[in-house]
Image (tube, rainbow, N blue to C red):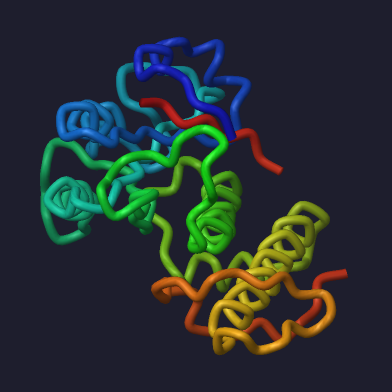
Length: 218
């Protein structure tokens, strides 16, 4: 994953080389621009892009930060099947937590927040699901479950294995984070400070598993 200015979103040749495109803005003004950049014509087929863009350019998905509940609500409502708006927004069903309580990014070389590994695993799972069908109108928990269960073709098996591996890793991190302070860490696990619990997959992964290019535009 890498970061590019939001203006580069207009570069169709660049987007044609990417698997997933996310738009994000930490500050209010930037987040509003990111939200608008992820809109598309609701009157076109789900797999088509607005503005006559060629089909090889993947559509952008809006990724909200914490504190942007209103923007996430707008994006979610615009993609609702019950509302008939002239536009819709593809929204990642996840809210990026801020790196620290003050809302400032962690300085270069600073300590990584204890929730960061699990946040990365959850986001990687969603990016994998988006890469499987970037033109989908929405993704949810059911989408992840279907992708994990589909194994008829080689591409489906690759996606399924990737998601199952991420699920197992999330459970490993979650188990370590839930351990009481001072308790010896079992072999193969890395001790991390116990953070605030993040909402993860409701189902446990019971199957042991035997990458997509995704820039963030801001």
